[in-house]
Length: 89
Image (cartoon, rainbow, N blue to C red):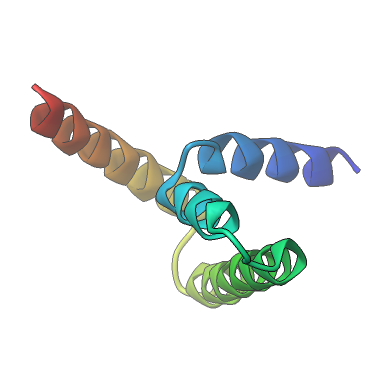
C-alpha cells in the first residue's frame, strides 16, 4: 500500500494546475456540457496515459538499470524546470 500512496500523491501533486486539469476545467465550465462525460473522458485519458507510462517503464527497465532511469529522470526534470523558469523570466 505504501507504493500506491507514494505514486498517488506524486501524480496528484504533479497534475494539480497542469494543462490537462486546466483543459478539463474549461470543458466542464462550458454551459450545457455534461459534467459526467467530461469527467469520464478526462479519467479515461489519464488512465490511458498512465498505462502507457507503466508499459514503457516496464519495457525500458529490461535494458536500463533503475538507478540510471532515476538519474536520467531527475536530469530531465531539472532541464525542464530550467526551461520553464527561462520562459517565465
